[in-house]
Length: 201
Image 1 (cartoon, rainbow, N blue to C red):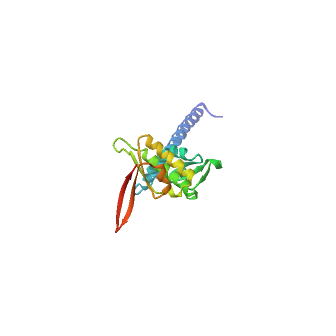
Image 2 (cartoon, one colour; image 1 turned 120 degrees about the vertical axis):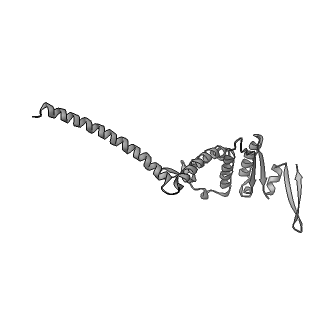
Image 3 (cartoon, rainbow, N blue to C red; image 1 turned 45 degrees about the vertical axis):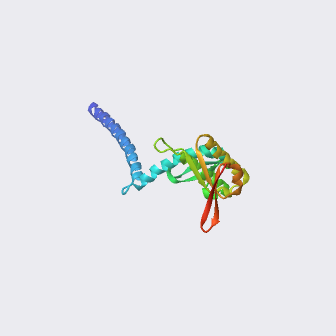
């Protein structure tokens, strides 16, 4: 039979054990935070942390690009690629026509890749600021890979940008663009390594 003093000692020990257990759980939680920071920052030149920060910027770019991509294609959505739950500097596409199946950009057709690239370019231009305004967008080629329907969609999106106050320039040799772009500059070779520049529209 335990004495009153032994019971009091047991109660004090049990209380101390509960305090110690709570402190251990708190320390384990804090150690996980530091372990995660160590994983991100690394122990040498901080390369992992730089990659993590860049991956967050990529996520913001994908969000902005998806706004434009939704106007160009109802099928795909850009999503960051994860590695052990952490964002990377790569991305995939979520195929909304295939129950959200992820596909790699290289698996897209030429026209689809163009629309994704255009969406990324437009998303990047959305980062403009007062100190660094981006009011002019130049697109160099890529239109030759588009079928007539996709070309119409792309030109419609560019026309909307122009209506919103941005200048859009297209550098292309595709003849079919001429009837859709009234104001253009044509460069024609005249021989001897020389060219003539004509402003039309």
